[in-house]
Length: 528
Image (tube, rainbow, N blue to C red; front, side, top):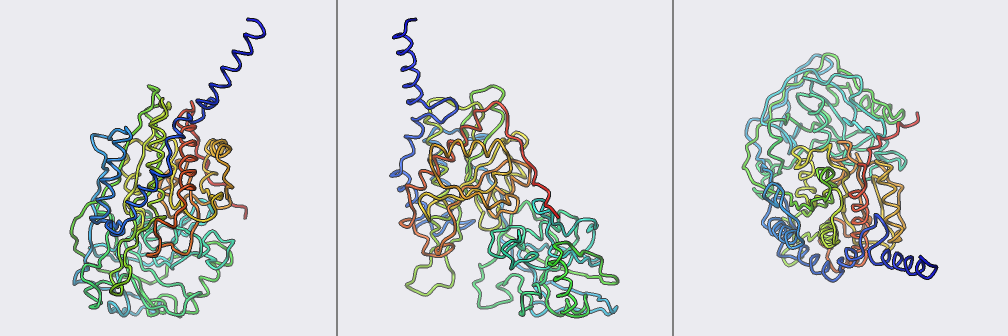
């Protein structure tokens, strides 16, 4: 080939790279299919008043699910096991009539407690009895990322654990449990789940006295105990968890004094934990509890919505990259003033992320070719109730968890500065972090990588991270409309949403089309 021939050949290669993207990049036709105007229509629909805030469960959520499934189908995604719906049961919980708490304290005296005044069952309590020794388990937290574990070196099996709300050094911005961080491990439901995971027979939870003066038990405001509450204002829990539940109640000052001798004594225990950032867990010698909580429930249903883009490689297509977002929100206010807005439309939280998933589905199916691995698109229900949908998925996955290469989660991607984006989870995999930076070189976001703690997160990537699956969490930050009726679709930056969807799609393509699956990087052990 002569010199002119080589020039023509190189020019053809260059034009091909421009038209289809360099090797490994998302094809340009896929990027072109992410259309802001289409995303605006989808956002307006999901955040419309007629969907009534997409509460889990609820008719508005069902309407959203049908819309998402139809969009997946129109994009060309296929159902999984014959369905676009990954259904799970929910239980609406009603408090029964037989609830009691009896505690033997450090002085050997036995005392019966009064419901509502001295103890109150939580929404996650069981329809069960329990009795046993009382184990003080600090804050009831197990956090591999910070190395803090209240259950280290103790055996909680068959015990009734006494734990405090919040987390150590909650007022310190440097603490992994700072009160202003979104840390799911400090939530009451996660403390109860952790107690169950460690074999506890029951749990007593108290407001921490170091930072609070009001120590009365709150638990859940059950309508049959608070006559002013609407009779249907009852909690919802995942039905599959019913058999695992344990009696879970909140106690107040009376129990603190009986178990520790005084409020000051418990306050000193808490201060010691915070000072050393180390547990003080121990059996409370001579202390026992007998607890009975009774509930009844009605069964309802919700679903995650799923769609599959099957990979092209005969071997790699058995592995999946998950692109997800939660599509639920918190419904309507039951105590709003007549004539005022009472619908929590949840445009940014998280219609924006849901629309991001739909845009990614459109892009990746329009690419003109398929990546080596399969890509599973999921929108989760019940995130606002306690990561219901994502927890249920990792419990009953559609693809084996070891075959899940990565989970990319979009939650609140439409607000704040147009060029800034917060990423959590980048340290969960070196390969995933490299893919993120390579993809962002084509987008140009100013990435805030300062927030780690993927396992502690309060969005749908966290259950996957806890199963040692690499994750990335795309988030544009909190704002004044968070969980307010003012979170409306016209406040979302649709151009930014489109760019986040493109970034997520590019990362997914890079991971789905590489030969080796990303390796999970365990959290580094903190320096003592």
